[in-house]
Image (cartoon, rainbow, N blue to C red; front, side):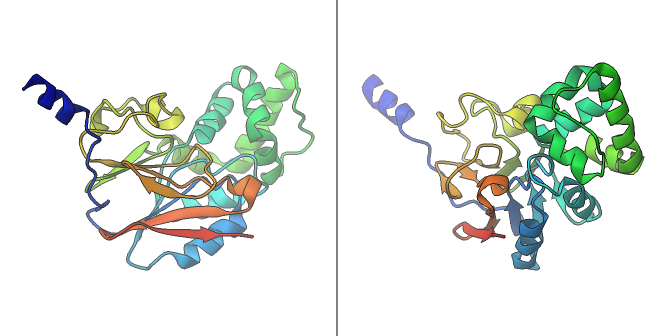
Length: 243
């Protein structure tokens, strides 16, 4: 009796087909790749709601253009990524958070906004001046938009977030830092509630759907390929857009 119960408990979780309440298309990390994003948007079926998993800025060359495009589309659901969080922390406290952000792609974002004369190593006064110039060109509306980005979206049995989720915690009780930065057990343990988690953050060679996880970050800034998944209750359909 006990052995049969243990066998049943240890069996892999069974996941049905991802089935959102209405059709959705989830786009992976854009990282300033405006050309790929525009091509991707032209491929999204008209009846699909667009969700972006975050990381619109840094590393690629056109972060400002990407932010302007997505922030003006009220029909898009835009989630918070760790690079948006790093940008906001720089705006709040440039001397504390600036050096790290600059190492992880902030230099490209500043350049895309026309902020010149920046370097990877700057003193406190230079970092504050850099922040002030970025704030001026970015404007308060865009900063408020960034600050209000949600960290997840739940539709049917599909949970979308930037970096994954704690597999042992209900999706509506997740820690926001984990949704933005990830959890060490996310890739190792399957969820037991049948919820599919669609995520970016971790670069994969090709988008995939397996064991309750759908990965859509194919490193557009490095590979030139932006990926997405369309979900409508049938089998997941992957879409890609190159240069």
